Image (cartoon, rainbow, N blue to C red):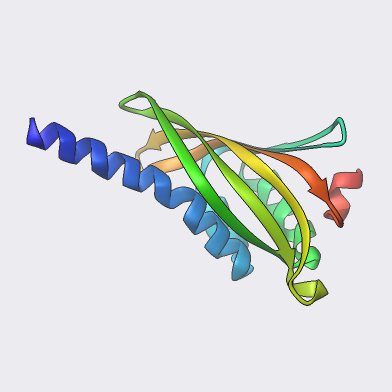
Length: 145
């Protein structure tokens, strides 16, 4: 019983660590670190003003994050909720306040992430990360493609 509870806590902690590391990598402009948080066929989708921008796979993710870097986003996430689907997959949500180092740390947006997590041979990864932008003062140039 205690072993199962410990395993469940360690799993949740590994999953909870993904959005934290994601934000840390964004703050440090560590694109390779961001990409490593995604499964090989992982995807990122941004939804804003009825438009959807989706990228799939490490190469496309790398291109997306490199072209987004000039915005100099500095995310602050909170209220992370995790729901286990089974031993190898989960879903979650966390909320975002977004600032820009380019604009003297001024507030530039808010929204939330709907995440899908998957257990891989390399540990827990994002299978999918969907950013639902509720408000954006500025946005990456790649969103206008």
